[in-house]
Length: 365
Image (tube, rainbow, N blue to C red; front, side, top):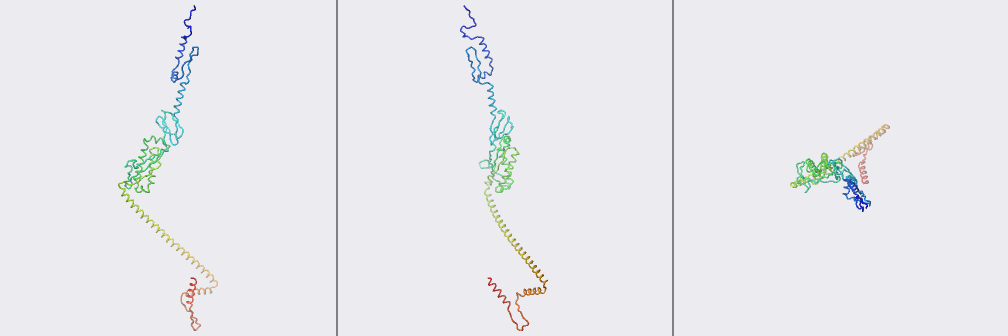
């Protein structure tokens, strides 16, 4: 009989105990990362190749890949988009570090940095003293002439683009601050003006002063606010004295009407007076020119006669004598007597001349 090796199996169905121990030692060498991979459902089952040897499985994903993907997702979460009407305020551990404009921006993800988006083009409106929008006391203001006025107005404002961080962090409630400062500024301006001035022609000036003073205070407080307009909505007397104010307004209207009539009469009188003065001046100037021209003509005639006189003194003297006598006797009745004639003939020359002049006038007419 052939003795059998006690360590060999006759049917080869039993595994080598040393080989099994060796496989067990290899399995014990898997580290903690292999367990993590098996936990995530990877294919870790061994296959027998028919020779009795086990093959260690290869995982489809490693732990390094998982960590890399998680890190990429973490850092990619820091990208964000700022719209054209927004500004982004970046905080690092709760402290402001920068303000960014429109476009694709990046921050280190939580818990290191965070971004706050703020609209900068939206126009906001605050109504002060408006009916049913505030307490009745805020609309009552004292004017410079010690009258109470019921005044309501609106403030239009927006966030300043280059000072968004001031708007977010310098005041807990910017709207409340703007409202309180606007009411204070309006009370100060109205308290220096007459009620009638604020109600009528002074509205534009009051609005301008209110806007400038309110903007100056916002800049002083570093509120990050732009004041666009201040609009007066209502300027009226209180209800308890509205009838008296209406009587005063009627009286002022009548006064203004009479004043306008007086000014119109004054303008008309002044215009007519200026016309009369101009007419007198023109007449005087024309008379002056006439006298000057007459004098010049007389001088010219005298010089002409004098030049002729120097040529023939006797003839010129006789001619001047005749012309002078003609001028003297032309308007008086006269009788010409010839001493050489004994009989005195009568010739009515004046009547003949008058008759001829009358006939000429009738013919011309």
